[in-house]
Length: 332
Image (cartoon, rainbow, N blue to C red):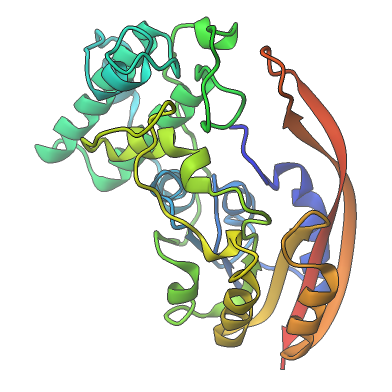
């Protein structure tokens, strides 16, 4: 899934830096990702540590992490996936509000895909309500739908706006591709909480932080994923059909430093790692000043190609060089 700030391409750098700083392997340590997004870090590290804690305020993120991190034993899902693949589309909430022929006249999905998303989402909920599927299978199927729908979305990677004409990938028929996950011996924990509140209740060895860097709110940029995952009835607002959405203190220049320091102060973890970049609301010096009050700090950097959707109608992706910071703190 294309995702703002995804650490997928930086995972080897993150693992090497963490292992060197803590002085060894992670297999006996509890690892927490407090701003988990689509779960790239959790998927990678859940097999490398004793147990993993994932958290994010957004519900779509909770669904993805509840599957990719929370599910750890094998599920027999083939029958359910086949049934979902063979469903006929219905004119439900997504079609009515986010497709061209619906009354909203929005263009997030071509009509047939919007109807198929509605049919699948409704069927998953019916199975859950009747007790035919477990919680584990429920979130596996929901994550599968989110990933599959994202592949045919008529957007430029984020859902802040839709494209005027259906692009090539969005013109394909929605295909249900299973959201497979890694099996592990031990269980893991997944939360949907405000990071500054959850930090008071959890503890472990490694705390990894990848908060929003700038003013872009994830609740608005990925509102369609929340809408599919929650599937509540509401009145979409404006041209883009926004629901009410969460606003993070980490996306505000006014509140970000105070929120960050409160988080570090309350963290009950020996090691804290912060991913940030040179385009963030907090400066390099501001972050070092805060972290240095709580222990020994090291800084590691990595240059990488970050992709941006350009503003032309076909939304070709262009690369820009970004410097990624990984601040490493051993709390005293």
